[in-house]
Length: 196
Length: 191
Image (cartoon, rainbow over all chains, first blue to last red; front, top):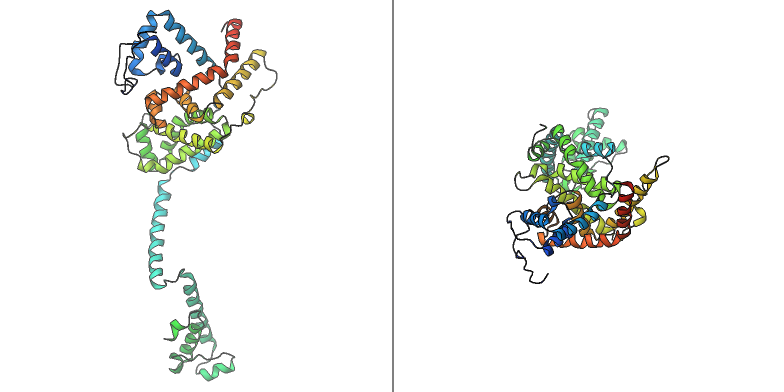
């Protein structure tokens, strides 16, 4: 192999698709077959023609490629993959994108986001579910008591029912309904918000 | 639709077109499964990787840019990286985990020998370092060019050739006995 000159520059793309060369040596063919095997289809496109030309005129080149072909034959004996299982196909298809569902979800997400924004403005202390629930319960309680009590019940009358009247601004103003609503609201966890 | 390109199918997948999803799976699942099976040596692991590959297709379909890359090359890249990640997490290859070939009922001697040889070739492949195994799988088994393999492995074409050369040298040593057996059988059975 004396006097061997590499037919390509290591830095160029001579092994790729773009550049073809007519030069080929046994040493380079040994490298190609040693890396890509005996099938010219797998050889670098840019050197394939030159390698096949050398193969046609050199018994030594053919011996090199035949040796690579023996390893190829062994590699071809490796077990092939089984066919995809029906379960795998089902799992993949079950996870596929669904346009309609996606639109509904994004619409719902936008609506939820709008309500959440409003709730955050009204109640910036975390989840708005608690004060909203407490408010609703208070109102219902007030309405319930209001309906159950006879008209004309005053703050004094509440004492006889075991309910301590609340000292609030609305307590001094008049009707039993107002007093009860005030009482109910004053039971809130944050009474300072309601006593102002 | 059967003639639609991969790019066209991916665009339809992004819109939730079930037929496009199914066609894309039909086109590529078997090859992804084969790639993962060669890399991991286990059908169950290969199915998990193949599933993950398609979940990523479903997730990223709306952001796919036609013409920027070949879809099948992108798929190979995703599958190869998923396999390399798995191999990185399990650095010691458990040779015993590779299943014995199944044989139902009496099997002719020639078939038993073929199965045994296949298992030993599989063991030799699983004994390769992960990136060498990936290079062999992509070029020898998946039939990709050196340029495509370089793109998938994110290395130069020269680096791919180096990986392949080292891999085949190691395989030649590991399978020296098998090579002699195979040559003998070729003569015996006239294959």
